[in-house]
Image (tube, rainbow, N blue to C red; front, top):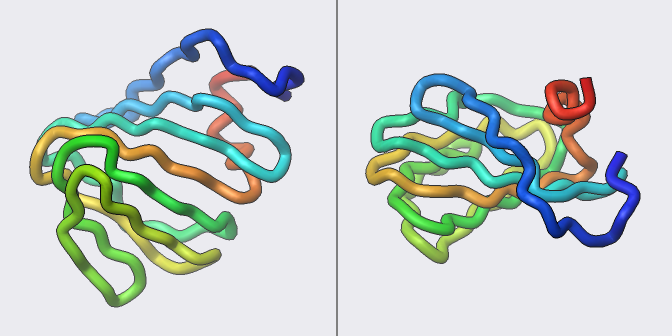
Length: 114
């Protein structure tokens, strides 16, 4: 578990395959910040989880679907995925999403903490 309130180092990128890489930036029991880099055409497959998620488009163009709603998002845009609502993205132009989760995604820590 992250014990310092500051993260001043660069954590390792995880290759997720399919043109996606993930970097856990920082976390605590109630909150997690994750960066996900996408190559053009990369897909964040539709899924759902008990965590609340907010995603910010740092760069690129994404077609995002949350529930029954689909919209093209560009740099500076965001989306909110409530708990257990199906959501996913398709990357139209290479880019990066910053994802915030509440509570933290323990499944993302498995490769980091062994």
